[in-house]
Image 1 (cartoon, rainbow, N blue to C red):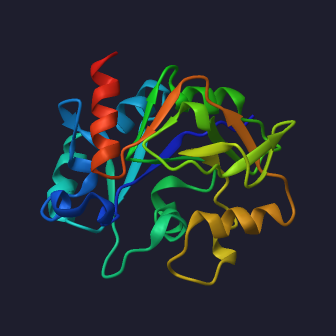
Image 2: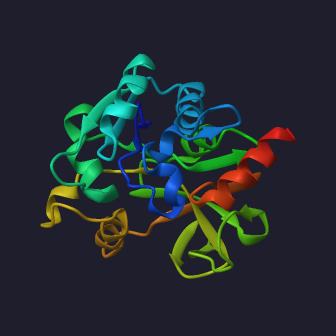
Image 3: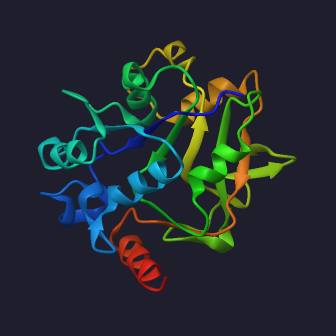
Length: 225
């Protein structure tokens, strides 16, 4: 079985929903439980046995790249244009390779088992993508609407589960998308034309620290641990 040995952290975004607090600081460098937010993602990946970690940068590259390099994370600078998640993953393939890749958002916070280890333990070679989901009752810092339904391990759009921003995905067909900048949503749709997409329900709680309220909530949740 081909297990992932590389990981991608999405860290290039503008952090627009954070408002003024990201005017001079990229969102992944905001403080979460006393440390840069992105450090929590790095630690989870390393604890799951992944040492080849790549992060894309764009907004305030000079504020985040030195920190990532100090943490032995490979930096792929998107310039002059930002490429979104799908384009960013494709742009990083020279560092990641074409085997299954763990991809994770830098503003996701989990309470419970290591979400990356859970994904890797559940991964099978017949999968194209395995998304980590959480029921709405355990989703915090986000809206009331779900992203997916789940039946016998396969996912469909819309339903009572939120996507947590962590997945394992095969990147070998990214070249089939003609756009330079595109979301992984477009790539999921491409894969799903021929194959089912799979989901795994996380057993703990999840918080999206994507805006000031979500970040404050994530800080309170971690302080209570």
